[in-house]
Length: 173
Image (spheres, helix red, strand yellow):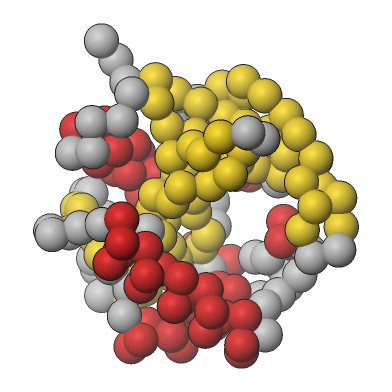
């Protein structure tokens, strides 16, 4: 991402190692990470950040730091990743926010910016969100982002079978 994405309240930018403490507040919180079957430890958090840095280098995008303009503080992450879904790869909008910043519309605002980036900058025809069946808040964000459920599957993650929905929205003609 050569430039930052900006919304009325947020800036989305590539994460750096300086964001590691803020990332820990997200990934090491059991409540935030319930859809992942629990919080990450230090090693898993470092691996997560390293994976984003690799994505920026290899794809030009990944999960970005979400910075609240009014405080210049990282409150979450939202961005685009390539994810496996059954027999194909899909361009996914993903988001995770610190619990203190839930239910304020930040995830929807950031997800909409990512959708627009995917359509306008990357030229994507369709974007997806893969969301655990029990993650009702993330499903609401996807719906507010114009998405609807187009498929479902059980994914095996961290030793648990987890039903997931595949949400999708197509670029307007």
